[in-house]
Image (cartoon, rainbow, N blue to C red; front, side):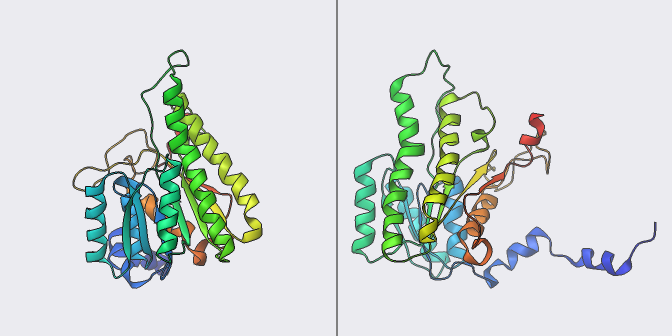
Amino acid sequence: MKINKKIFSRFKSMNTPEELESNENEWQLLTGKNVLITGACSNIGWCIAQETARHGANVYFTDINETKINDLERQLGDDFQVKSRGFVSNVSQTADNDRLVSQLSKSNVDIDVLVNNVGITSLNPTVHSIKMKDFEKIFQTNVFGPLYLTGLITQLMAQNIIQGSIIFLTSIHQWTENRNILYSSSKAAVGMIVKELASELLQDKIRVNAIAPGWVEEDNAGRAIKASDRVIHKTSINPKYIARAAVYLASEHYSRFTTGTVLKIDGGLILNSG
């Protein structure tokens, strides 16, 4: 086979992932935007806070652990030239959502991007062992609370003529079984909420999308975990790749015409379901 030397040379000179990361501070997609992230003090939420700040956004975030909130607020302040502020708030509580939005309004903070990151699961209940309190807790946290907060934020976006972006974190288990009827059904509900809200908010030019991750985890050294059932790379997914997808969906530069979309990032896991 004859090799085109020009093409071969071009591929050899392409940046590696490590080289791209070293240059990522040279360009920013969210400069001056105000981003609100729920549950930002661990795993995916923590990485979304880092990535949006790296791209120039002011980061406002919630968690239920005050110590972790202070740690993240301090780190964002040390590492990035943006505003950051954390709030103790539980998205499943209506009063907490009302107070959060009131505090932001009193501080004259208009949110451009809302990332509904918080989600919980439960021990794998069978249909015969489900307790109503577990059903209510899962749906209040994964569905009702985020939907209520989204209503508050999008109402302000519409009033202030902000063509904002709403991002939900759902899961590949909105499509494929997880042997956890409560969690999977709550994520399926989020998937339909994205479509309904995208349609409803078209008139205000507010985009609504979601990210559906597979298994997201890394070890203490920040390395993905080996997993032979993943089709590509044979590992778990580092949370930073979910965070970068959130930056893409938040950015007008890349996703101005993207709404009603659920972006699946699962390392090819669903491909194995066949």
